Image (tube, rainbow, N blue to C red):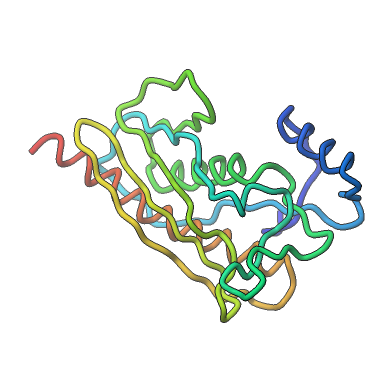
Length: 201
């Protein structure tokens, strides 16, 4: 599947309610394509715990919408491109893709996405708070977040990753965001391994 292309799938109840609410508000959600983030490959690491859980993703208010947000550093903050929509709630999609990215980067580890309580017992869990998931003033895709890796010890980092889209289309932007998120997951995987090693020293 090409990165950024949406394929038919079964909407979860939350997604369906979001779409129905937008339609009730007078939005025609289906006059344009739906977009999805996709996992990207990274370096596989060893020395990981047996189980890792990705806890609910925290988003700022301006990203809690179905429109694809661009240019929040511009004078008109958070202006969406008309008829450009995420195919599912952004926090759920990011959580799912982060989980898939970590499964590839932490081979042999059981990685689960805990979208809501009750949470799955795990050796280590990940708390991810997004600050930016949009574009900067130069048009680069930006993923900026604080990640906390929690086990017997806590490791936290604030960082960002930027990727220049390979064009001006929304598909190119979504591809760049997927790549930037994948590079951020390289950091998360490194912190997971580091936190697990700390527990035994």
